[in-house]
Structure formats: C-alpha cells, structure tokens
Length: 106
Image 1 (cartoon, one colour):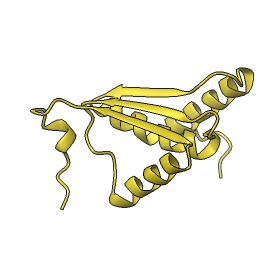
Image 2 (image 1 turned 180 degrees about the vertical axis):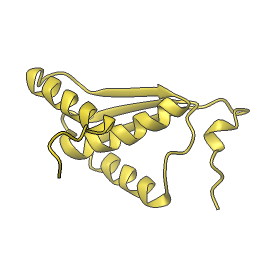
Image 3 (image 1 turned 90 degrees about the vertical axis):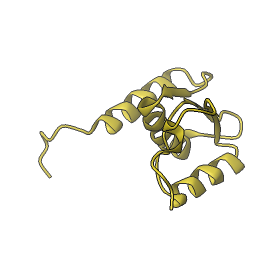
C-alpha cells in the first residue's frame, strides 16, 4: 500500500462523521438525499448504522425520489439493521415517478 494514495470519498465522509459523533455524542445522525443523492445517502447510512447505530441512537435515512441502490442481499442487510434498531429508513416517492423503479429488478 502506498501511503499517499487518496482516500475514497466514502472513507473521508465516515472519518468526518466519526469525528463529529465523538465530539457530539448526544447528537442524532440523519442522512438524506434526492434522486441519485438519495441512493448515495442510503449506501452511506448503511455504513454509518453498521458502525455506530444503536437502539438508543439509530441512524435515520430519508430518501426522496431515489432509485434502487443495490441488490436483494443489500436490502436484507438494511432490514436486519432496522430490526436491530440501528437504522430507520423512510422513502418518499411520487406514484408517477419512474426513478424509484430503476433499475428494473428481475
């Protein structure tokens, strides 16, 4: 590994969230986004909830008009984190918007 290789954006976001979380332990974490930003926020929410979500302080995700973010296995992990109380998810979609139906699932 090279020491000067730049970190991916997600790694930098997680570092920043962790610093803020440590500095403000009573704060709640909310991630939100619209369209593609909603899908990216869901991916980030999964990482944050898996690392730091608790029953007393779950990570909250709110997606607006976002496309599907991943596979059925990904959905299963999200549902597990929700059952464990580490993650709360809310999706807001207009019934005529095709973006939340993309990509088409088999």
